[in-house]
Amino acid sequence: MYDIIIIGAGPAGLTAAVYAGRAEKKVLVLERETFGGQITHSPRVENYPGFLQMSGNEFAEKLLEQAMNQGAEIELDTATAITKNGDVFTVKGESADYEGKSVIIATGAAHRRLGLPNEDKFTGE
Image (tube, rainbow, N blue to C red; front, side, top):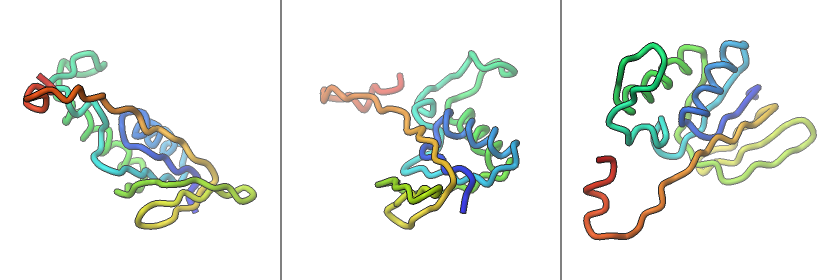
């Protein structure tokens, strides 16, 4: 049983995992696709304290590494439902079910596509 289950491994979810780990909580982060969220599409991050610049991928890697160093467990799985029975939450995933005392939903957002020709080619430019 986890103290906190975090659904989503973008900056918000991974930051929550870092602080929960620092508070000595048993943490699980569930992510369906890739770690880091939308920031990974950014070629350059320049407004983060302590760093002149880095790519969005580098930023995401640092967040993931820090969360894992604080003890967070990471699972690639898609959360499909959340139920509560008494004081226990069950997060149903496509691969397994996970039990925790609390759940943080940090699923972020996705860019809407216009469906234009060559749109993928110019995304992130």
